[in-house]
Image (cartoon, one colour):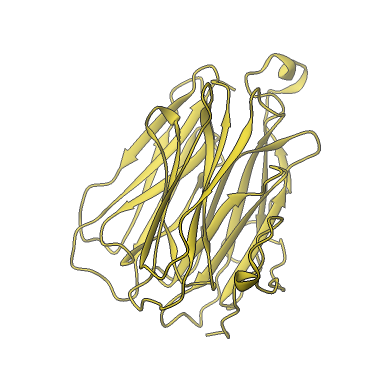
Length: 310
């Protein structure tokens, strides 16, 4: 396993000196291995001259993938095209099941960029893997705002934090973050609140635990209600399968604005491997797996999609 690299700085939000880390190098934004190369921003078919009347005008998808290698920590960012802002963030990795965690999947404060950090945990792996990032972008929506909330800084094994949307707005996309040494904990869930009132982010330490203090962050991208806006949920059965994936499909006539996922099981013994919209534009998928230590307990995976008329 490659030498562990300590935590990098958040993309454009300064951190306290005690948690500031050197930026990681060597993660080229090129799709290799299991992920095909994709352009930085893909226009959604059918926009054209009608975009001015669209509910979500200027909608595009910006994508990137890291180098496919055995480095223990991978960091990646993507920028929305000029004149657009992030409305949703998703990511996934191709690492061995349960040996890589998502440290953060989130937008930057300006909503111009999105970023992901993934790290090996426990015994790690000598295998090559990469991380994939997608940002849903659109022209600024009416009332669009980013709400960020952070948990307390402690050495507890789990953290939960909620970011609520302002009155008169609804969630269009959310994200989460672990702020500490890379791999000290992983995202357990990023879940929209009922009525799209905000988002909750939960993170947990892996079975090895840690004495290090760290905190979790929740990121809610909110905007005035959109036509056809709805939250679609799809949950797997409860079982002791070592890995699961689940797909949520938007109603006819709507598209995915953002994806999210939640593990319901022993904290830290099952980790999210990813959540993001699929290329169809109408489906979102989540992935999760037991850690290298495994668990005899049953658990489930829930994938959610925020949908709206395009």
